Length: 271
Image (cartoon, rainbow, N blue to C red; front, side):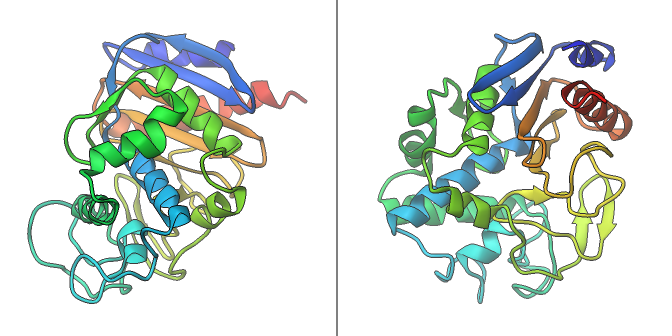
């Protein structure tokens, strides 16, 4: 796919990208064997572990955990009131605002691991990584510490297109709006009213500008990371696009990511 060659002009020392359709990979480009830091794309793996735990019945979305008054749902949907970073106290009441929170995802992982009776990294491995054949590893925070190659993105994206570890209905619920109406900041892109999220999955909806393409449907869901990484799935296209780089997120990504996405979609959907 010619569009993927655009990543060569991004100024990253290393970059890799793949377009995924149901049943496997359509195209890939770049440094496909390198292990990259996924940064906040890690949250999608943590969220998927939550979905497995929900189906196993070891946690419930209404379980009380995290800051006072918060639940598993609040933590997963970035509505617990915990700050973006650090060990500080909540800056809002649960369910009041959409505050993107790394500590919230660390608290969510502790809750899952505690319910499973094992460290979260072990549960992630048993519930998601090993069944999907992922070869990377969690080297720290369940909010941003996964390291893996492009093959892991391809395998995970294929799962999101045709789930095998959870029921399709479970994934559909996770990629629908939870705690609707909450406003908040989409990091790097500004404030939205509302700023819709699922259970760990950022939802495009009607957000413009957005880190996905202008040609992506409102049903698109996914996540991006501070190491210049992203993964989106567009159910209307029945396709996914994942990118891994070692160039930190900055203004360069605001234009390059949507342009790449639109070019990929143009190739997938010729006139």
